Image (spheres, rainbow, N blue to C red):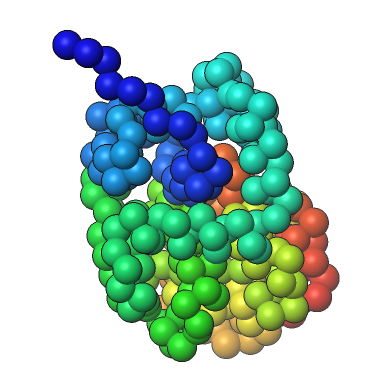
Amino acid sequence: MAKAPSVKWTREHTLIALNLYCKLPFGQFSSTNAIIVDVAARMGRNANSLAMKLCNLASLDPVQRARGVKGLEGASNQDREMWKEFQANLPVLGEQSEELLHDLFTHDEEKEVDFLQRDKVRLVAPTGPTETQATVKVRRGQQFFRQSVITAYDVRCCISGINVPRLLVASHIKPWGKFPADRLNPRNGLCLSSLHDAAFDAGLITLDEKLNVILSKRLRSFFPQPALEQNFVSFEGKPIRFPEKLAEPDGDFLCYHRDKVFQS
């Protein structure tokens, strides 16, 4: 049987691969992964080609290298240049990669591509008032950030461990409105339950240098309330659940939150 011709890795295909890299755990870069099989087929590629590209990208990830994860050593010069460009220009390329991925599955602008069920890709309507009212371009960027952060934390609140996707928020450490350059940076995100997201955004809780949970005096002023204490006091002084690869929270961003947002 004649070997199928190889498909050139275009800029667009590489952006899609970078998007997937941000959303899939390293241990799921397999040619048998249903999501990889599906996306590869829509790209006109075989699943092994896409899986190898993801492993090549892992070799360029400084967070993975620090953990001793080497990936594959077949990264091309194009991969290296695209990796650098992607990380340096996330506000633009995050949106573009999400748009390219979206268009593989649908041209319905009222739907977004959802990866939170690890065994399949779903098309979902935007959730929450911010996403439903945003322009399509902005919404694609929000979707990229949300999916990247939540999947990096294994679809669990990094404080409470809640793993109901509809109750989880990709919370910005530095505010979305004030820091446009960091809006789509997964390291500016935490996967939090809706309750803990609201508390973090209001400065009622924060994280110290070791990623332990700190409660503010303002929050404590509402004690005693058994339900409130159950959701916060039991986690005080304990470290968050650590994420995978690119979403490890940036220390400078957390320092900003402690100094400018937290109500100590």
